[in-house]
Length: 121
Image 1: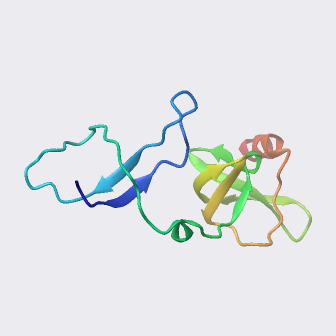
Image 2: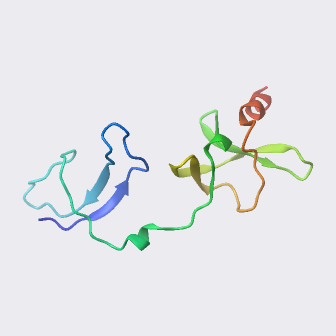
């Protein structure tokens, strides 16, 4: 038996296999387990620690422009300006925004492709 720390969890579950990948960190002095090896694990912990409030937007609001994730934010003149954002996990049609957007800002949730086309002209 190994005692480990969960270092990373994929933000999605594979539809076909209904599995998610996790990365565990633990001491392995005898080298019994190797990277990439499949294991069955029992996770014990405080699930309330996994819950946190995040800023999330509809997936349709996030566009990819020149390798950067952007959202279109409403400006004071009523138009929209592109804003680079760092995204995180996604679930249920929503995407976590880790930086680049503040709570309460108005964004374009539809018509993003048209705004993107105008931006790239």
